[in-house]
Every structure is written in structure tokens, then in C-alpha cells.
Length: 361
Image (tube, rainbow, N blue to C red; front, side):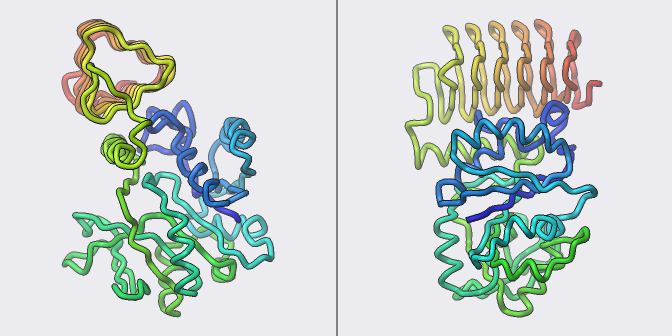
């Protein structure tokens, strides 16, 4: 079975992290975002994953070679010479996705994090017998999205309403699809949108069905949603795989700590924290609602909340980092400095406080 992951472009919304690696390789809960998806696909029998990509394919492939062997799954790239939207990449990768078996293939948006109920989606797809299945999720503010109108009994999609001004429903496209190879015949090799051009056409032929996603869902393509997504992900771990969480006198709520990280005395960690490999958290540190990536050092009595600390960065003694601060790779925040929503590019030293959200070049 095959799958295509829409990797796409430059990850500008997650800068400065994406100045160091392509967005799918940014760590989320201590492993690259895309690895969460590849592991879920492998678990239900997918044997080849195609990455639709137009930015740094060689970086992606050399990184993923190690996981290809470890997971026993083939990972290839389909490179766009120009941005092809969300449907064009399927036409471009047609030869890789349609092997003549007639078997459906998965398509995933690389920013989406959830519990990936792909086994259930396969059963749903077989049962309804249509050409295509999409996953939908319920949201509180549907006016910000394209809303999917469907028959509640059968799941058949009737139409799509883009950013409705009045309430028409609360289910939106969750960015996970299961398509029959015949759908590829509807897609031209040009920049085109699967949501706005292909799916409405399949829906008009009464061949598109929507499955309501159980559990949580988040598009983690920007810092605020990345932090919210971490909370939802750790909450899901607590329900489904509590052994993966860390416990101890210094931990509150849901926290994951890599086994190679060191934590000093008198720290208070949590809720909703991920601490990556090789991190050094010194005595008296306070961490909450944050990600601390590989090789970071947080010095004594520093406080980090609601922020992302990029690889190999240092936060000085008694420093305070909060309010969606994002430190790129190898940033050094000096002792007693305060960052209120600073977005700091890689390899910088911060000697004075950032009192309001700003980008530090």
C-alpha cells in the first residue's frame, strides 16, 4: 500500500526553526513531525511513502534514510519544480501511487497531528464503496475554515462552504484522505487545489465520503498551534500510552523527558512539556507548556513557559522566557534576561530583554 505526504514549501510560519531544517523535520514531542505520520502509516501496512516536496529534498531524504532502514519502509521524493498546490503533486507522483493493483492510497498533509485512525478509515472506505474518503474534524470556530456539509447517516459529502458567514456546520477537512487510483484521472498536471477543485467535483458525483475523526486534531504549522498541539498530544498519550509519559516528584501533569536528558534538583516541570535528548536542565528551573529541543541547556532558576527552545540553545540563570517566544537553533539568552514573545533567529546572543513580541535578526 502507498501513501503520499504533502510536504510542500518553506515553512515560513514556523521560522526561525525552519531556517535550520525543513518543516517536517522540526521536532514535535521529541521526534520529527513527519515521523509521527510515517510510523502510523507503517503500522497499518503502508510499504512506500512518497514525499511531495519543493524545498530541500536532499536534506529530507538523507535524514529519512536512517528511518527507512529502522522502520522497514520505502521513502521516496517527488520533487516539484514549481509549487503545485495540494492536488498537482498527486498528478506528478501518479506513477508511484498507481501500481495497477487498484488499491487505494493515503494522502496526508504534513502539518497535521492527531491519533491517525487509519485502520478505521480503511474499513470506512471499503464499506461505503465510493471513490474517495476524507477525514473531518469538529471545530469551535468554523468561520475560519472551509466547512464540509455531509449526510450524517451515510457520511456522503454534499458540498463545501468556504469560510461561512453564518453557521452551516462545524466539520472541517482534517487533511487526511484515502483515494482510489481512479481519482488521479481527475487531476491535471498543473498547480491545482484538491480542496477547491478536485473534492467538489467528486462530491457532485456522489462519490466522496467523510469520516469524523475520533480524538484530537491540530494543524501545528505555527508556534501557537504547535504549543496547543503538544498539550493535546500529551493528553492523548496519557489516555492511550501512559507509559511514555515521565513521572516524579518534580513533574506536574503530562510531560515527556528523553532518557538522555538530565534534570537538576528542585526543578518544577509541567504541565505540557517535552524535553529532548541530551538536554541539561539545571537546579531550580521552572518549565511549563513548552518544548525544549535536543542539546538545550537551561541554567539555574530560569523559567520557560509557552515557548519553543530550538536545538542547542542556552537559557541563562534567572532568565525568563515566555509568551510564545521561539528561539532558533543555537541561541544564547544571557543571565537575568527577559523575553516576552521574542522570535530569535539562529546563532544569536540575547544580552538585553525583549519586552514585547518582536523578531530579533
